[in-house]
Amino acid sequence: MFEKSQVVSMIALLTMSMGVSTASADEKQALIDDALSAAPDAISMSATIMDWEGNVLQEGSNGFTCFPTPPVLQGKAPMCLDESWMAWADSWMNKKSFRAEKVGTGYMLAGDGGASNIDPFAEGPTDDNEWVVSGPHLMTIVPDPAALEGIPTDPAYGGPFVMWKGTDYAHIMVPTAGK
Image 1 (cartoon, rainbow, N blue to C red):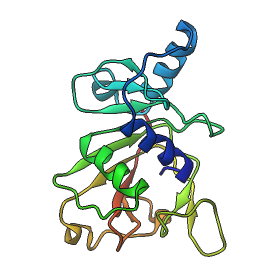
Image 2: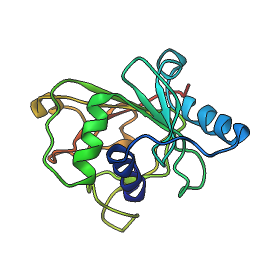
Image 3: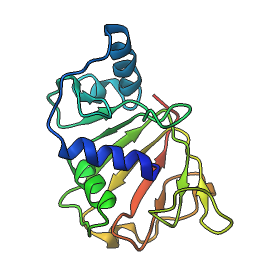
């Protein structure tokens, strides 16, 4: 999942006008390549690619927006989000209530640095917030929270699990083998 600082950057991205990238051609290509690693080629190759300053690096046509690893993180954590997930991210960052209008899919096939499994606003691991570092995964949001019943909440379960159950930001984490 996203660190709070990542989502702050994402919301800034969502609310600012599109800019023109000032990165060199090599820097821009490195950002694009990183963002493309977030999702299957069939998704990422037609997605809009944006940097964390709101610059469109590559126009897309399929409703997905892919981001490179946030510059505030060590390692890799690119993500690719559909329109439902972009709305989710806006609600989460602004602590607004959220209910998906349709099923949404987000990809993080390079994994991420970790998040609390129970507290959507935790900024780091504590003794009681069930911090989990996720390998490659996709994320699904659903319009009806009742659809999450019966899905485990334990990330060690070995399959899909519900993260942030009982909150407006509950979603299904689906571990994958990667890209």
